[in-house]
Image 1 (cartoon, rainbow, N blue to C red):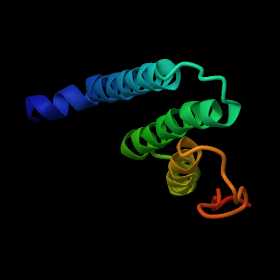
Image 2 (cartoon, helix red, strand yellow):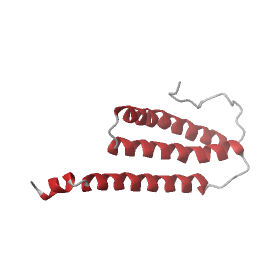
Image 3 (tube, rainbow, N blue to C red):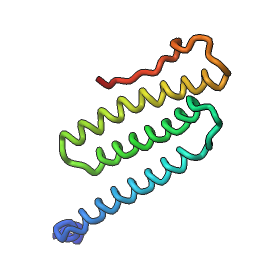
Length: 120
């Protein structure tokens, strides 16, 4: 038996994986919270909402990515894949909408880019 195998059998490999997952989650959460508050409030609720929701969704994507790396349960992995797919679409939609709002009042509030998702 190699030292690596002994290390795995003693549970240290699982401890390292757990530590890596926990470290990744903690780092991701700290980044998400920092990014959510980075722009501050502008007095424009729509823009402020999007400015905070984009990093919130990016944080969800990162958390889902970590569970795909470290998780083993097929249903949780499926949920993580669905989160990545839906939140990625929502991030793109929110960024597009932010670009419209930055230009000033939108003469076509229901126009492109519409906010959309793959939920439902």
